[in-house]
Length: 504
Ligand code: NAD
Image 1 (cartoon, helix red, strand yellow):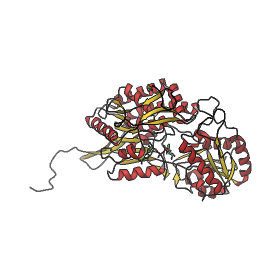
Image 2 (cartoon, helix red, strand yellow):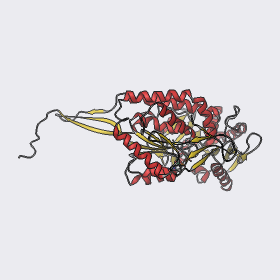
Image 3 (cartoon, protein in one colour):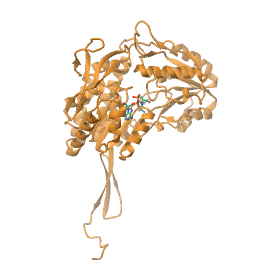
Image 4 (cartoon, protein in one colour):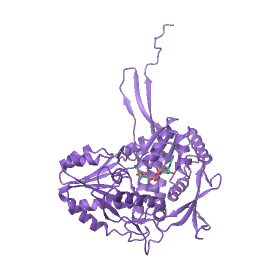
């Protein structure tokens, strides 16, 4: 666990000291700069994180390169690499309770959500530990006397850049498969939530992973992140974050033709037909948008409701949403926590103002919440707009907050047209009692992750990623490992003699 620094300059309380980990050493930034880490439920400083520089990023990149070339990790038999990953999973589980509290303090999410994330993180390491020891590759029956085969190899040095909405889990979705595949890594968590990503690296160190294999650099995206995306010694950049940043990453990576994997934003449709189980559909619609305060890439932020049940849906959805208990994540009663930062809260509130200007009908919420236990936290009430239309910016753009845009549709064809009507294509769901209709609609949905009569369940075993401007590539499942592997063709000559092509 992270060490405690003496006192915050702001309020005199004890705060955490979040360092970087480069070539097996814990370090401050090369110019000793730090950044405040804020608890979004209170507005208080809970840590100071090293603010990495370009020089720090380069040191980490060279350390990862040296470790990769040495074979200290990539040449290990997969069973041995797997043993490290199992050890990491065990250690996450041992510390899960404390880490869940830190996740809540850093990100704001309710403790029960953070608890799930810790369990999923440990399971993800175990999943890839198991997978890397399984047979893979292919053989090809080409003309005699040749035999062709394909083997999978690590890519090399992987740059991993992640966001703040699942600080530990988004880190693990990349680190577990990247390490399983035999790569070395340079890892940059979000500057907003560096605490558990750093604890994870401590755990990896304690598990005995050799120095240089895993390197952690904190700092600003346009500085450290950009250096990782553009540096020649990085063979692949795997990024999760906003679509706008994803475009920067692709451009930064272009000059060195590195492999780019992108998990980006979404504006996902949740389609509710009139024949659906009404209470179940309302329940999942609430879960789809308000879980994680709407700060979930796959959030069901566009709720498309068939005309026959539109008014009834709005009535019930409003009644239930108004009962959601908003508060600090550490409170057991809390069902929805704050937004992650003041800047993000202001962005979400500005979208709510925009929705009003665009003529959408505000059903409830729409304001910052203050009061007894909310103090200086960044709380925004669950909010919904009805009568939204496809042209509105609140329907087209990712708000990434507890703001639902509800839209009426008539029949299957219109549902599909509206559902596919944005630049995003991450996720989507259909609620109906008609199985054939559910499949017809899902098959037309231009999205990578879909549910029928459900919303949000995510599995380590199944691929995660988007169509269109929601990304390139997949996390998790077998695809998640393949992202971090090169494919090599090997041709074996079974008759070792001259070709006779040239006469002399
Ligand atoms: P962000 O794009 O602002 O930042 C993500 C990471 O990129 C951070 O570590 C940041 O420091 C870094 N970064 C920022 N600018 C950079 C640059 N120019 N070069 C390199 N790195 C840079 O995203 P965020 O606000 O942290 O996270 C929210 C976004 O993440 C949402 O759009 C959400 O949908 C998306 N997200 C997607 C998935 C998915 O699986 N598709 C999962 C979680 C979050």
